[in-house]
Structures are given as C-alpha cells and as structure tokens.
Amino acid sequence: MKNMNDSKCVRRPLVADHIQSLPKSGIRRFFDLVNTMDDVISLGVGEPDFTTPWTIRETGIFSLEKGHTSYTSNLGTPALRREICRYVEENYHVKYDPKNECIVTIGVSEALDIAMRALVNPGDEVIYTEPCFVSYPAEIRMAHGVPVVVETYAKDGFALDPEILLRKITPKSRALLLNFPCNPTGAVMSRENLEKVAEIAVEHDLIVLTDEIYSELLYEGEHVSIASLPGMRERTIFLHGFSKAFAMTGWRVGYACGPREIIDAMMKVHQYSIMCASTMAQEAALEALRNGTKSMQQMRDSYHERRDLMVNGFNRIGLECLMPKGAFYAFPSIRSTGLSSTEFAEELLKAEKVAVVPGSAFGACGEGFVRCCYAASAEDIIEAVNRMEHFLATLKR
Ligand code: PMP
Image 1 (tube, protein in one colour):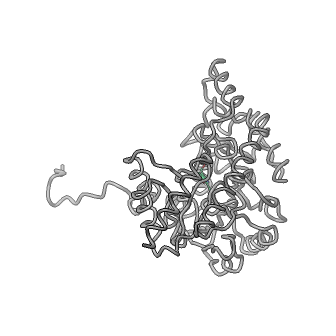
Image 2 (spheres, helix red, strand yellow; image 1 turned 90 degrees about the vertical axis):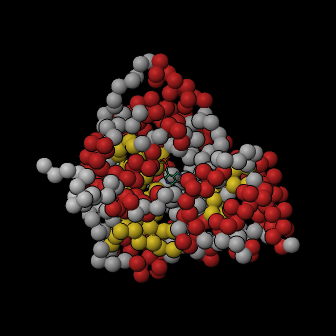
C-alpha cells in the first residue's frame, strides 16, 4: 500500500475547485470589521428592525407547547401550502395547486439553491441583474452554472433594460434570475418593461426565477409579478418568503411555486438535503398569512416614512440618491467624494462610526454607490445623516 507521506504521492486539494474559487461575501468581511467596534450606527444589515409580530411568535410557542415536534411532509404542511397558494393568487394573480406546485423551504435562500440545482446543467448560462443580492452569482456557480451579468444603471432607476438583456442571450442561456423590488437598489420594474422581458423569455425559451421577497414592501405604484404575464406561468419559478414582510428572518421559512415538473425536481433536491422546513416555523408562517396582514402594513408604513427621511437627508447633504420604490434600502452615489465605495465605507466607519455597505459588494457596477438600510430607528437615521454630512465636510478640507 502506498504511504500518504510518500513524496511521490500527489495530494489533491482539500476543497472542490468551484467552491475554492468562490469569493467570500464582501458584506461579511466588512461586518467582521464593524463587530470589532463599539457604538456603531449600522445601516448595514439587510433585515427588519422589528421583532416578529406577537401573534406569529405566539403561534410558534403554541406549536411547541402542543408537542408538534416531528417532521412535516417534505413539501411542507398541507395547510401552509394551501394558504400560500391562496395568498399568491390573491396578491400576484397566479394560480398554483397546493398539492404539487408549491414547496415550503428554508427561506428564499434554499428555494433559490434547489431551483438552481434542479434546472442547471453544467455550463448552462444563468443571466441575472447587478447590482444584486450577494448570493446570486455564488448560487449559480454552486450549481455548476455560468453567471452572466446584465448591468442595471441609475439612469434607468436600476430597472432591467430589455435591450441589454437581449444582447446577453446565447445558445447556452438557460435561465433568467430577477429580483424586483431589488436588493440593494430598491428598484422596481414597470409593467411595460416586464412585458418586454417576458416576451424575450418566451422567444428564447428561458426559465425565469423571480425572487419577490420584497414585493410587499412597495411604496409607490403596483407590483407586477412576471409569473402573471402571458406565457410565463409555465416557465417561471416564483420565489417568496416570510423574512422581510413579516419580520421573520430567524424563522427561516420561504417557498417556491411553479410548474409541477419543476417543483417535483426541486422536491428531490430538497428531500435528500433538507427533508422539510421547521415544523414550528411553518405553523408560525401560516399564522402570518392568515392574520399578519395588518402588522405587515404597519411595518411597511413605518419603512416608508424612514425611507423619505433617509433619502431626503442624503440628497440634502449632497449624496445624490434616487427615491427607491420598494424594499428597505437606499443606494446613494458617493462618486462626488472621489473615493471608491470600499474606501468610503471604511473611512466613514473609522471616522464617524457609521456602517454602510460598499456598492461593489453587489457586483462591479455597484461601484460608486453604497447601500444603506433604512430599517433603523428614525433617531439613528437622523444621526447617521448628520455624521455623514460631517464626514463629507472633512473630505473637502
Ligand atoms: N433574496 C434577496 C433579494 C434577499 O435580499 C435575501 C435576504 N437578504 C434573500 C433572498 C434571502 O432571504 P431568506 O431569509 O428568505 O433566505
């Protein structure tokens, strides 16, 4: 038998190539730095500053009290799937069968992962927009796909320009991943542009994954789901969850709805890797859909006020910022400072103890911007804007 220490024995790398080559999230690195400091005002983390509404928490507690501690069906409890399909039909105008067109997942994160793994053959191209949620290109790579970026620009309100999308399509294009309202820009798509994107998807036989996790947090206009447009239901996977609208990030519940064949395939990946979402969390999620609308609307109204406070504040101090129509992020330009977004974020943190996320963490075309989450208290927003004004003044000296 060969000795492993024999110099002739070539050791293989410990980690698979496609994982080794993944960059660590830019946000994580930055927050490791934030965590070493005291008294920081953080506009960095992308999650609600509300605790989950009480009746939802109480339902979770009751679930444990009643001893509901075993696995559920792999797809999720029938009651939750029925309620999800009702909610999706009512709010997004697409009808799904709870029996086989809906799967409950560990957040949108898992839904995205199992959708990619179910759809993508090695080498298939998946088109997505940037700036985007940090997980997207990594999710595509982990499924052995090839990420293809469509840049979005401030001049278009960071909406996807269908003309640019068309130029990115090749014979290897397999899927298109959309996220409107968008993290990190807060951008939304007009119905007209979404219709053009849908036509392109049909013409080029693309599967569309639509991550609508922020769709309840919309402050102007109407939210249109691409799944509801003609010819789209059969080629769209609708991804949604409870983290943002119902302030349930830690419960880890999301879902995917789509054509039976795709949900069946996603179910296989889910079954072998996850089994099912947490029973207690599924029962709490059911309560959120049944009785959580009023609390959700109150939280949305509160974000709306804080959006105006932050964005007006940025524009007043000279950081040009579009008024985002949805989600809870402002994405001001920091180009006037001459700093890169990483320099801006690091220097602001050191000088004024305000944490914002460099735009470059969301893709190369996020350079020149920073992401600021307005799910922070009004006092913190006012104080952060004041500190940023002071920071800008010191840069000019
Ligand atoms: N999609 C987007 C666009 C997000 O911003 C996030 C969370 N920041 C997720 C998905 C993941 O959400 P979940 O908690 O449902 O896994």
